[in-house]
Image (tube, rainbow, N blue to C red; front, side):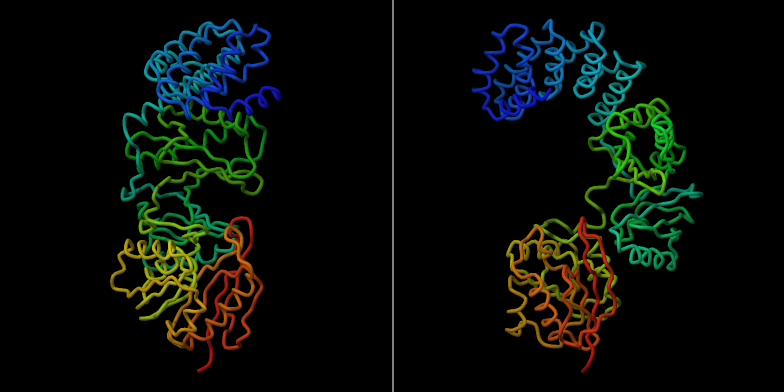
Length: 513
């Protein structure tokens, strides 16, 4: 296998002409024993010609691969079977693959045929594999999902009311360190007559429970969480066979069926995803096949499925959660443009809440990026005018476009391509005129910053100059720098996981006259 992979890597780099005139011609002349050593040529042809070949070259390669389906060597046939789906569905190719099923020389060849048919098969394949065991059942489910995907689009219904609320629990997941802000937002919504109450908070999540009929729009009125998943159950970390049965039972549980039926228009399909520790690829296949056997109405489909089944480590086992896959996020429809190292929108929403109440205030973001922090803060109300500065003209253009898409016409806006330090020194932003500085400065990871600590110290100095008494600075501090000006008083600090590294989310208040 190692020799096969090494040969494949070399051939993969060739052009179509070089591969065809050299390796393919040599393979066709080779003895059966030599072919065994050169079988990686078949894999390379599938990849190279399907990705970079012309229509004529692709047709020639497809015809060559189909010819290999009659090769006396089982390994040659398996490689050709695996390569053909890369060229897409083809009725003739499907018929040839189906013809091989009854005569497959080994279970390994039959599995290869089922995997290929699952990718390119249609109604004929569905009829041939219906009711079959093992790999045939897996192919049946995949073909069904593919046909459903072609025949009708599926979508999640945001405004459909779900009435059977007893026992419905949702995990609002967020970055570690932001749980308190997510919880407070949910509690505020519940106090205003919301339909979902906070049950508990854990590491990286806030659990809420339904108390009245609700819609997904009710859930997505909350802006600070990252993803939301309906809790279907917890599976103990037990023996593989027991885990497969437990995972499958959770996926097709009465609650899962009721939720997906209520909130789905079109075929019900899901993508299974394990986070951190969990079953490997073979076990995942066993889970989705068992779930299909229990409920053929619910189809596993990694491509464009409206739902995800997320499995998260939880104590001594795993939490199984049903998550709507909604794109774009209905809370961020304003986000038409993005820039490198842009802010994570839920983090921006948390920072906006952390800033507190405002009234006809001027808000400034010295590193505005695509404008997410300013927009999230303006959506909360209390901003009379916003100002965004950034060194990158593309970022300023993105911020302006996103601001326009947010529809915040009542709030004055100004965006400028400028170094925030020069912006202050020139008097473009007056001393004592700003009520809130909210920003997510460069972290020095995706965009290199020569003197990151010095940059943060300059931010503190600018804040001390332009903030009015009682004004606030809310930002993600990637350093341990603190302000030299004692008029900036630390009011709150918490450590937040920003995706592999910790950062300090801080809030300062400007004191004095």
